Image 1 (spheres, rainbow, N blue to C red):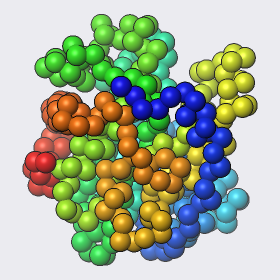
Image 2: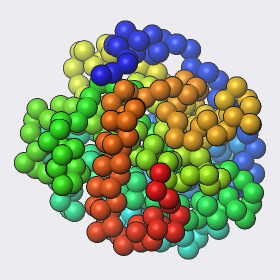
Image 3: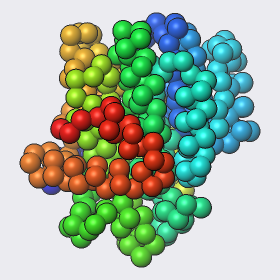
Length: 344
């Protein structure tokens, strides 16, 4: 099923990460969700060095977010960073964040969906009743991206630019697939997010599953945007030494990070390339970034599981189930789908 062996993973981890891409972001608005530490903070630093007109650090913790804004100022001299609070494990918080953005952001040029939850080995529910990592990684992130799409498209039209939405996924999506009973169910997300389904055995591969869903979402979202001037892509930052690994302990994990782990800054470069890079520096090749899976500053094919006719059937099924789920969270989702997206 997968096209990526463990040995190719090791090879990629030892491959030199390309230098960061630098463009002028003067006058443009950038939002990084999950920006107080790790890849998100490193990406925010790079955006600050590009003189972004507005730079929003979307964080769950006010204390950690304020510390990140101060650290950003000290390390880059950029003093315009804004802290906005959002908790992706709480749908009400996501809706409030969207309301704030639609009221206060006149434009939105780059949206980086970096926030992610690493699952535990057992089911842990959010206040909304979903398994936490599924809600954070695969329900709230799409919800936020969909509800902000109108502002992104307005930006493209009014400023004659090509905004981007970047979904952070991972190469670990190659190493999992969904059972038929999930895809054959009335709603795959309701199955994946239920306590009954989330056994300790299932939870062992939950993070991989959430990254596979990121890839499916990116491809489905892009195919419905059609020819509109916006790029939606997904990026693999590689295995990095970040706080996302804080629940992983032991000698093996320590050795794994020591021998293979990239720095957070190196991982952050990948997010930057997905947000502002161009294939081979060719502006005429920007269309190739639409719906693309990006790794090491290049476009790659994702897992076989998402490709071909069968992959497209799974993609359409998951999209339909996602929209059915999210419309219950916020009815505006249906308006966005009806007004701005098309049937592929």
